Amino acid sequence: MKEFASIPVTKVQRASKFISAGAKVGGNYVKYLSKKVLTGESDRQGLDEDNAEDIYQSLSELKGSVLKAAQMLSMDQGLLPKAYASRFQMAQYSAPPLSYPLVVKTFQNHFGQSPSDMFDHFERKASHAASIGQVHRAELDARMLAVKVQYPGVADSVKSDLKIAMPFAARIMNLKATDLSMYVKEVEAKLLEETDYDHELRQSIDLSEACAHLPNLQFATYYPLLSSKRILTMDWMEGLHLKAWLAQEPSQKIRNLIGQSLWDFYSYQLHILRKVHADPHPGNFLITADQKLAVIDFGCIKEIPVDFYDNYFTLLRHSDTLQPEERDRIFAALDFVLPTDTEDEARYVTKQMSSLIHLLSQPFGNEKFDFSDTDYFSSIYNFADDLMQDKKIRSMNSARGSKHGIYINRTLFGLYSLLHELGAQVNTNALVEVPV
Image (cartoon, rainbow, N blue to C red; front, top):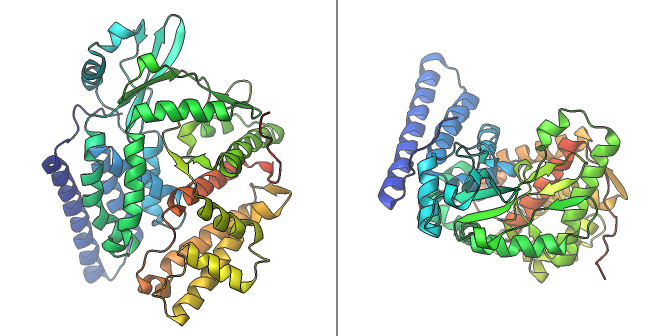
């Protein structure tokens, strides 16, 4: 995979990269329209694929917040056209890495030493690279370590990047840029947390200790003396990512075990801790040789406000039995229905959102749920696609939903997707006990 020897770090450099991406997208539209005029053929799928590829390549060079945001958007079914979602998923754990000299420079800036001075062995080539940082394997005193190194300039560019990227996102989602500001601020706050490895170190230790009693999970030990604001050192966790593990054709019993471990991990966080590991993509988990689920990244943790929790999970747990008055109150509290909606708009949005909530709530309404059910997931994906193309909804041109829903929806969609890929049958009403 190609390595990058540098990253655009100044506002001018990064803005120029956005402009370049916009020019490529514009060129793709010209080719699309020309073909349509000359031949009468309309290849919208090809246009989306070309645009997605050009935008992803530009974001890969920029890295940081915009690449992370692309990864986030790719996890929410129906939020992006399929071509974009498919390409942006690459940001989860296979982005192009940085060259070794830049890694050395980061170490010198934060420790006054090179990696070879600090470790008995440090692999120059990154084992994997994502949107905000890349991981190198190292060894110290016979202990194998994973060292996460943040890309230069990522933290400093979060605010300016999101400001530049907002019009692109608004265009893709057919929304007003001004309507996105509340959500952008929420994303900005979490991204700034993710670029602060001192903060990640503290929450990694806190959350792994809080969940240590849960069965069949494995967490790393973290090393404060080998960590800094831009470098994070932890135990190297041996295991396979989900696709590689599934290629070994594990039994249904073992897939159920891993699925139950994943469900219990998230259930305990959501309902007991009221804060959650809000980045459930395959790159953040490993399955060990002894069939345990290893959690390897706590960079994105979302604390859940009491009011949001009560309203959101009341919907998921009682979607089919709520009285209309209570349903309408919750829809308004969660900003699904807006004060500016006409009666007709409110009625239509309520109908559509009720159908979506009914689908999402299915695992909560059963003692045991089979996440391998392709009909269920097809229903979700098809409904999300239809909703995205719904001309009436799109004509309203208004962003909907509480800002807290960004990361909670992302968590549930990601969790459901992982369990579906596992083909797991899970006891979704299991009570996870609090340690005495």
